[in-house]
Image (cartoon, rainbow, N blue to C red; front, top):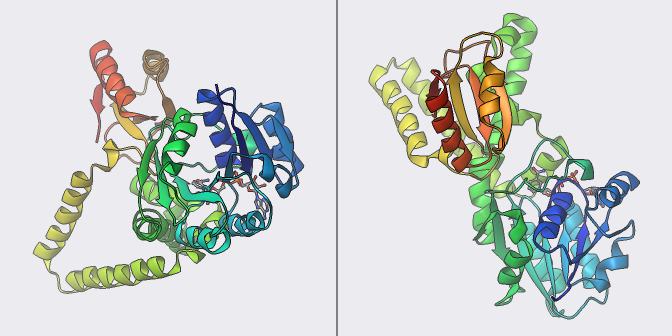
Length: 368
Ligand code: NAD
């Protein structure tokens, strides 16, 4: 079988997880890694994520059949420039993992045009609050969208070759133009992070004067602000490399807030009802719970009594599933069905959980 050499620059959460996914399907491929700090380099070697590692970015680049840049967006652009200045293997495939795509694809076209290389942008749409090689997880991208954004340097075979290389991730591959990727993610990912952080900032200021605000914050407030715990550095670079789309979404949203404020001040009961009804219907139609993708999970809610061993009994029934999180909603149940919330990585396990809990216990089960 043909042995390929894969070079992954950046052995953090994303680079390390990609390495594990590649090894899962192609154990005979050689994976070389670059990492700036000793820590993740040592962990990556110890965990077998890579076969060899360096702290000199240029060292392994000429050996590679595929180069994956899994570093912050700005550094990805710097590395593309460096790659344009060194001799690489003829027809090497270069790709990245950055969360915004247009600036990276433009930089690749600017620096690499005329060189005998292939380039396609990549955005593996899964992550977590963890970072570094220690957090690498072979399951990270399962069922998540893995987006390719073609460039002028994408050949007929480039994406097919990468799909084969990355088949062990068990992700859902999809192609979209870089500018459209950035517009769509500004709406469903970047702007919600701004909203969440702003809401958290507002509530924090408010809680300084109204002490009970911290204590009552639960349920819906927790759901709305979970992503405010994201890594600040990554989100700063995302906003600054997708400025136009993000600013446009902010301006659109300000008008929407003004419209709601107007309805409230006019006591327009019907219009306010319509406003909530429309949002509810839109959310149902988008089937947000039913799909994998950006930071999504498949949640089941089980209404359980507050008795000894009940949770253990349910977890025992779910052995061998892709269970990723268990949460006990005990503080405030006004907008949650059931008290035990269990999250899975995929829809099959969610359905399996529903069937097994319903058939083997008397507890009520809800899937939103
Ligand atoms: P991470 O912090 O786990 O790893 C980042 C890696 O980049 C580390 O190896 C670090 O040593 C290296 N690095 C950082 N600054 C560097 C510099 N100036 N020079 C050289 N190396 C440097 O982060 P991650 O989550 O793996 O993110 C990597 C890329 O993946 C980013 O472009 C990010 O936008 C993208 N991404 C992240 C997520 C997520 O949720 N974490 C999801 C999709 C895409």
